[in-house]
Length: 115
Image 1 (cartoon, rainbow, N blue to C red):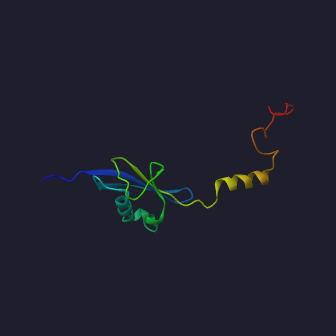
Image 2 (cartoon, rainbow, N blue to C red; image 1 turned 90 degrees about the vertical axis):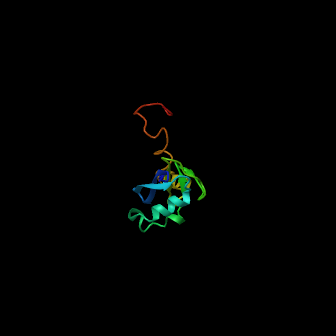
């Protein structure tokens, strides 16, 4: 009797702000990302998360459901952005004003402008 070779992958999901759910999953060798999604969805830690609808990646890079997995891969599920980061920066800058934000906002008393 020969045992079926398996790989271990780490599955991580961002459930909410500053909430990360992690688990290790054993999959058969040659498994793809879709297999990891199904295996993670069956775990109690991921209950209530719609993993199939979330964007996925492997080690921080976008991946498709057919992407093959290797031993030690980190499968990640991402939440959609609520605010465009560029728009948020523009709003913060507009609220703070040009004088109190930026590289030269905290000058020493009596220092020249720009230093």
